[in-house]
Image (cartoon, rainbow over all chains, first blue to last red; front, side, top):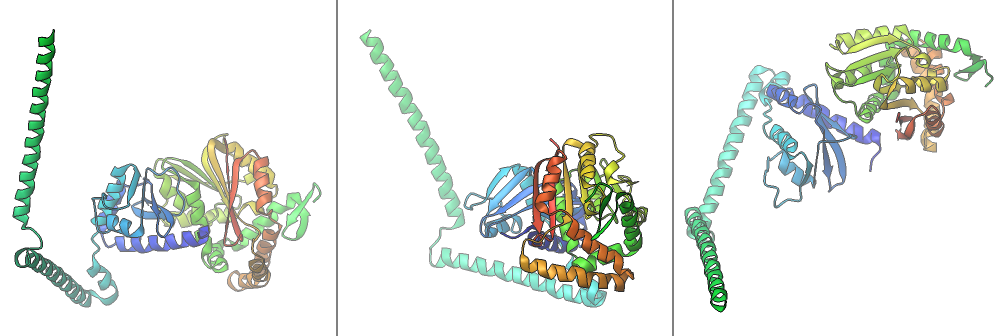
Length: 211
Length: 248
C-alpha cells in the first residue's frame, strides 16, 4: 500500500518507542536473547499490513521486509492485540492463524505479556525522584483501586445474575452437572459397547447353529 | 565518452584523474559527512540505509562486505546482526573516510567482528567467493569504471550471495524531479558552503547524481556483470533506488 520509505519510517518510529520503553524493563533484554535472529511474519488482515518482528543485540526489531521467517501469525489487528498484549491463549473463537513454529509465536507472546515497565523511573528522569515517586504512587494506587472496583462490579453482577435473577447456574452446580453429564456419556459408551458385543455373540451363535 | 576520459560531475576528465579528484572531494567532506548527510536528506538517508539492511536478509555468522562504507552506518548494523561469529569488512577507497568510520565505530563499541580495508571497488583485494552479501551505499556513482567494479563484486561474492546497490537515481514523478533539481543545484551547494565551507564538493555530489545511470540502465549493467534475478526498489519517488542482484 505504501512505499518502502513510509513503511520503514513508521516501523522505525514504533521500534524506537518500544525499545525506549523496554530500557525501563531490564529483564526484557535478557528475555529477548532467546529470540535473537528468529524472524516472525505478522500479517494483519484488517487493515492489510505485513511486517516482520525479530530481536537483534537485545533489542526488538520491526522490519518491512524479511526472508524465510520461522513462523507467521495472521489475523485482524484486534485479534492480534488480544494475543500479544492481553495474552489470550485460546485461539479457537478467533480468526488468528499460526503457520510454522507455534512455539516461537508463544515465546513472543510470553515476552510481550511479561513486560513490566518501571514507570516511576521514566517519570523520575523528567520530574526528579521526589515528584516521580509521588506521581507513580498515585498511578499505582489508582490502578489498584480501579482493578479492585472492576473485580467488585464483576462479582456483584455475577451474584445478581445467579442468585437474584437465576439467569445463570451456580458455578458449583454447573460443575457438578458437567461431571454427571460426563459420567452419563461414559456409561452410555460402555452400554453401547456391551450391546455391540452381545449382538456379535448372537450373530456368531446363529451362524454356528446353521452349520 | 572516449576511452581515456570520463565524467567528473558535468566535467570531462582523464580516466586516470577521476579517482584522485573524487578522493579530494571526500577528504574535504569526511569530517562533516554525517552532519551533511542528515542536513541534506532531512535524516531520510537513515531510512534508506535501514531498508537496505532489511533487504540484505543478513544472518548471524555471515560475512558482509560494505564497500564505500564511509562513516560506517551500514557496518554498525551488520556487525550487530552477524554477531561475534560473523565478519563485516568496511572497505573504502578514501583513507579519510575510513579513519572517520573506524573512530566512530570504535566509539560505539564495535570491535572483534569488523575489519577495515582501503580498497578500490574495481580491484577488490579478496579471494573469489568470499562474502555472503555485498553492499555499496552512495558509492557506485563515484567509481571510475562501474562495470569493472560490478564484475569485481560478482567475483568476491559467494554463490547464492547478493549485491545491494543503494544509490541516487532518477525521480519517477516530474513534480518531485523539478523540486529535486532546484534543491540539488541551488540549496545543496549553499548548505555545503555554510556547514562544511566547501560548496564545490557538494556541487560535484549533485552533478554526479545526474550523471549516474538511471534505474533500468543500472539493472542492465548488473545483469551484464553476471548477476541474476536483478530488481530495484524505488524510494522517495525514485530519488534513491535500491538494486538487488544474486550470484547464482
